[in-house]
Image 1: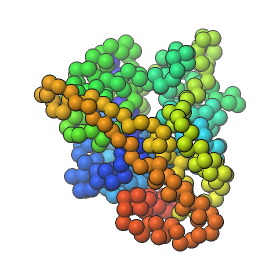
Image 2 (image 1 turned 90 degrees about the vertical axis):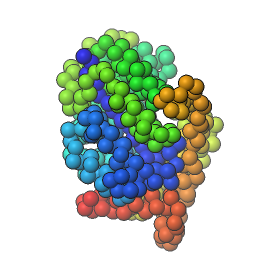
Image 3 (image 1 turned 60 degrees about the horizontal axis):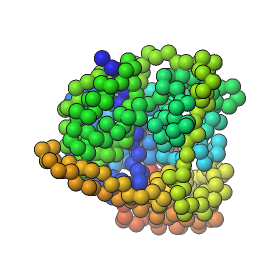
Length: 395
């Protein structure tokens, strides 16, 4: 029987997840949508490795502490991987900015989870080889790579077995390849109420242990999303779920790879995030500010973390995806459903403008922004409160 790890990326700032929709999912205490999503795994006894960004953890802690209790109270069901605080594109981040975002995310995860694997899940599988060295030097247990997201000529050069990837300076770090085809099979199971497609895909994996990566926000983006996820879990028939900490794979050393294999971490294209270069000016403004990030006040820090989110660019540069859905489990025909991009680009602009004004000495703009009764202000207000506590060691 195939043993498999269910690694769930969860980014509360996903470009299709409107801020008001996300905050609504946190309302209702133990009966919130987010708690009900977590209970699907508890009630079915399905192990999940959650990759919550620090920003997601901040929102949950402030707006739905019952969900935090549910996670901490079920360490036999939930394990965590390390994530940054902001779901950032690491390839455009400097060393200090990357390290600061990583540190805040890791601290948030340590506060939330009773069981934490020291594997790092990079947003969008984007990582420079200098950042591989930073992770290795910081004692992380490993990282993930997803060859299915790379160009075909690069994809075939990524080892399909666990291996040690090279970082600069002679460093090495264990690297786990994920099975990209399982992501599509999961989405088919959700979109079409068809767990058989998932079972067939998992049955087709020949390795003894495989890693699946998927987005957890799908259950909050689709109509009847929680019911779709329940249907998938109920229909799961193949394989044994395990935690990352239960993997006992041996990792190939760089010298044991063939000359055709990439020994370093493959550099991911971010053309989709810069398709029409509409965000070039925005990125330039961020770049000028980043060198001061380690000196930011908590007010400035929360705005910077909001502004560097990769989904600011996704929402602007990417088209809204369309998916074929079965409206009900017993329906014959499929319908076309559009997942509209949120106004995350507008949110990023507002936060960046507020940050620049703060750095220029405007002490009032941020307070006026927080006092507004609108979803973005509520979200940033909660994250600011969380960061103040986290920095002070009081979370």
